Image 1 (cartoon, helix red, strand yellow):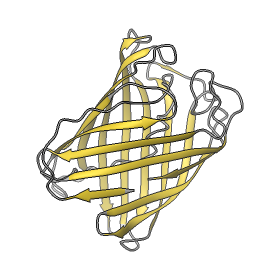
Image 2 (cartoon, rainbow, N blue to C red):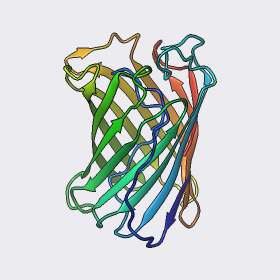
Image 3 (tube, rainbow, N blue to C red):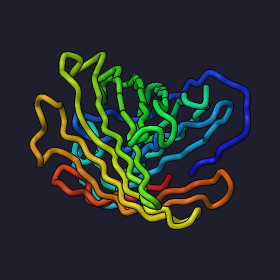
Length: 253
C-alpha cells in the first residue's frame, strides 16, 4: 500500500536489505511491481510496502524465487520503500527488504519527458544493491537499470519495464548484463477499482540465456486503485509459466 505525505524535510536515505540474493536470470521476488514513468513531485514523500507469499512453490532449495539452500514453498517477501521527490522529474529512494539476510540498497528514478509530449512516455530507473552476506550471495554489488515506457490509450494503460542487471563486485562481475522484464496492462475503470494483467520474467545473461526450463516467467491478474486520498493498493495471484518458476504467488502492494 502507498501513503503519500506532504512536504517532509529532505533526508539522506540509508536502509538495510535483509534478503538472500538471486542468481542471474531470476526475477527479484521483492519487486513484483510495474513502475509507472511518473515520479513523485518535488518535496513529496511516498511510503510503500511490497509483499509476496509463495503459496505453491518448490520444496527444495535453489528453485523458484528462493536462493541458496532455502526452499521457496511458503516463503514470504516484504520490501518497505521510502521515496522522496528531489525535483518534479527526479526522485530518490532507499528500501528495506525482509526474508532472511542483509545489505543496503538505494535507487533513483527520473522522467525523461513530460506526459504526452512524446508518442510514448519515457523515464529511467537505476539502483545499486549491496549484499553483505556473501555466504548466501557471492554477488556483492549489483547495478540494475530499468527504462520505463508508458502509453495511455483512453482508459487503457500499457507499461513496460525492461530490466538490465550487472554484477559489479563478486561472483559474476566478469559476465555481461542479465535481462528481465516487468510489464503491465491496466484498464482504468474507477479511481478505487481497476483491473489489469502484469507479466514478470528473466532469461539470464543476454549473451548466454538460461534454458527455458530454468527461466522464471509469471502472469499476475491484478486489481488496483486508490481507497482513500494517497492510499493506494495493488493485489493479485501470480502463476508460474515455466518449470523453473514457483507455481502460485500472492502479492499485495
